[in-house]
Length: 129
Image 1 (cartoon, one colour):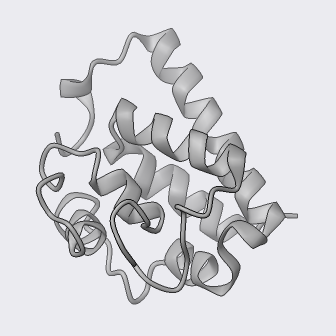
Image 2 (cartoon, one colour):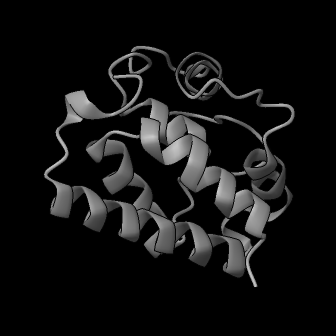
Image 3 (cartoon, one colour):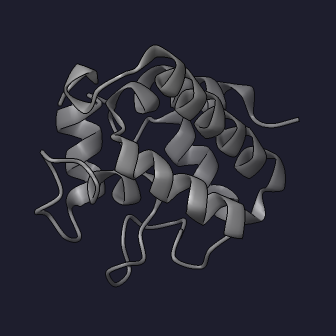
């Protein structure tokens, strides 16, 4: 069973601020258990970044940042504290190695993509864009 608090935070506080490009990037990396999707740090070397950083590199307000992108996106766009984010804390423990968390996040991403397609959501309609 995935850490429900972390997945719930992802659905509630991350996905509304994630662009279609960021959502696609997360889906691709999560499906592949990609080594480019890291944990324990926001970035190592571009293109290696955590969940927040991968989203941030695909968001118009934070794409220009490199190593600070994930922190900036969390603070300025999603309005979350990286030090207290349930998802950041859960992801930092195991990252893609936590199969249940990864599957919970992937399921949430697929559901969000389907919801947007069904609702005809435009990028400009996303919160924080």
